[in-house]
Image (cartoon, rainbow, N blue to C red):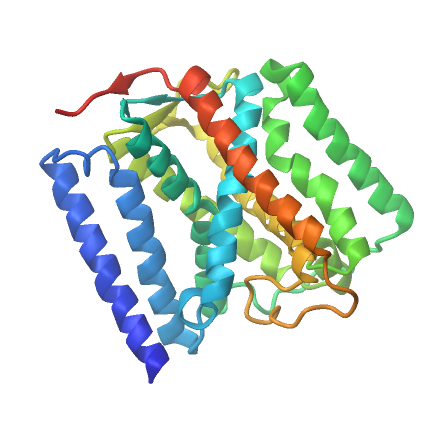
Length: 323
């Protein structure tokens, strides 16, 4: 079958990237050593996608390639938003970044494109093993009043870090969840609130677990890479695991949930069609007008361009040139 061949290709390509990345990193061969983080993440994404396909006969890249490209492109946009927020928060800085602009910006793009695929592939892998798939909870009573309160809490969680970043910086990792979940619910898009209303929190648990796993991998591969980020997080203490203060690992599960809410909101451009296997049928209703689709694409590219310029000017602490 064609899909079986695709899965084999992903496995072999992932192993090849892992070998090249690990070998180049170990012997400090440039620019592989510098870009090791990118090699590691793309190898991981390709390999676990093939593993998911072997488990359940369906996976994001093998079976829903168009969804994978959408996800990767919007991943760049979503992470660029957090880079823009970091201009105010000043929670991380980059070290040993290539001085060559074309290599540097290509590295930014390829790294940011792994964020959502890494999170959601890990979530799907956990779901394919049956983790929390039958989990039940009390049914949350979702009312207009509750939605309004969650939305207002989200607005506060977005504004406060911008006003007092030293004390409220952590709220940025829940702000978009609180802002967008009520909107997703009302628009009939994928929504964790709707899952909780049904008493089925499995997806929430899978995202939280997937976020924690990805957080460990982000920090481990960053620690081993040539180019890396370091943290300047206030009030987090000095106890670290790799470069991240231990307390900061709480943010990774929350970030996975936040990315899920953000991408579900973006799926309104495609009438709710999104990356999940059971979300391949668009909702009823009119398609998004062409001007909106074009505007969204322009916004995405402009956001990445602006973020890259800001990173170069304010977030990179040390550049390095390769002969």
